[in-house]
Length: 116
Image (cartoon, rainbow, N blue to C red; front, side, top):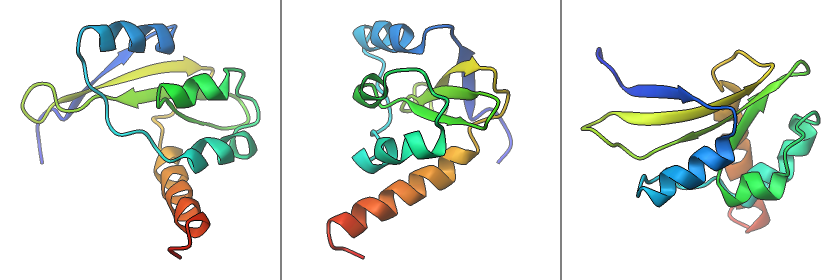
């Protein structure tokens, strides 16, 4: 519907911002499955951040051959409104590729566990 659904906050250091906000009791959405990060290097080979650190902090990554963005979403903080924390690395999209990447990762996880 109409109205504000979320507020996007840009940062130059998403991991530090995330760790600071967690110390202030800000809660984030459930992390994606392990397979999301396993598949990330093939999907986005130009990511320079430590994938283990991104995974530990449940940070999502999207981009293309020119650059990428790092993002994470909080749980609702004010009624239905949530925050998106985002760090851009020469990428100006909105994380659209994460929808497909998350779906593929969940599907791959289910295959590995014998559910598909």
